[in-house]
Every structure is written in structure tokens, then in C-alpha cells.
Length: 241
Ligand SMILES: [Zn+2]
Image (cartoon, rainbow, N blue to C red; front, side, top):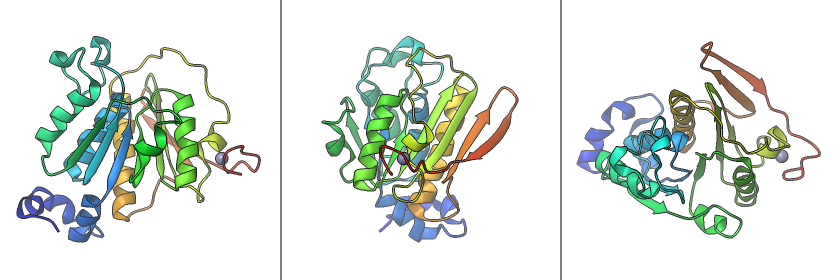
């Protein structure tokens, strides 16, 4: 049940067709894991918090660095050297005290993943590396939890929604990880991709609209174009086939 403040707070989104009070109650009952409180995670976390997702579990082991601040907008100058999850929680609680903000300063690995994902309805990608994404991909296939992938480079971004058993998995899409490297990025790129991830998360949780499934959306900020490619399942995929 929504309280009186929530009915006012979410009034404008509940006015939408196929959303209503019922949709808001579904959001309130949902728990989303945000893997990484960096650029993608910052954008997504602000909007999922504002929208009233009932519980957010934000996972990040790192501390805020000055060089993060061009894009990781959850963290402000006074937060340098603080844990990112603590900096994130401080802002998000002020934005919306109605939701349950869980923070975990854990590394995401095979040992921690089952506990980190337990009870979550969806996992949102705020990561910057493929080895961790592949671990999450394996875990979501075991548990049947949807995963929203988002990746960025410079002024390019990509995103898709992975539904275990229904869509190709991350390993079908990217059989090989690109080599790890320090990459350039303009802050607006993770902002845009992180918000598309949040948009798809809200649609999935409420159950309306059509999702970005079986398609990879590609954003080119330099020329300001969006394009998409169909994703096919790999019959030889070592993870989902
Ligand atoms: Zn696969």
C-alpha cells in the first residue's frame, strides 16, 4: 500500500496509462541491484530512487577519486576518498527517504554474487569491465534474474535487456571480452546510457511497454545517432546453450 506522501510524490507517473497506482505498488515491492556506483550507476540510481523502486542494493568496493567527478554525479567534491556506496546513499536518502537503500562495499566475485543478488528482481549494469559482467551473466542464468547491460566508451554507448531463457545472454552477444584498459569518457555518455537502463528497469518492474530485448541499442553521441542491431542466440554459447 502507498502512503499519502507516496501518492503525491508519484502522482505524475501514476497518471500514465498502464502504470497507475498498481504499477507504483509493483515498483514499491521491487528490489534492484545496481552493480557499480560509477557513471552508469549514478544516473540510474538517481532515477530509480526518484521513481520509487522499493529497495535498491548498491554494490561498489571503491572510494571516490577526483578523476571520477566528470561523470559519476552521485559523488561530489567533498566526497573524495569516501566509499562510493556511502556517498551514494547520502544523496539518495535525501532524494527519497521512502525507499530502502542497502549498500554493500563488496567486491563482486563468484563467492559474493549469490548473496549479493539474493532477493533481487533485476540487476542493472553499472560496471566498467567484462570479467565481472560475465560472472553476473552466469549468475542471472542460474537464478533467472533479468540483467540490463550498459557499456560506454568516449561518446559511444550500448545497452540491451537480457531475460534469462528468453533472450540471448551476454556471452552470446560478446563472446570475447575486450582487453582491460583505461578508456576515455564524456560524462553525458554514461548519463544517457544509465538512464536508458533505468527506463527499461522501470518498464520491466511495472510490466508495461516493450523492452529492449533481442536488440542492442547503440548510441553515437558524436554524430547524435541511435541505431540498433538484432542479437541472435549463439547455439554454441558456453554459458546459455
Ligand atoms: Zn549465451
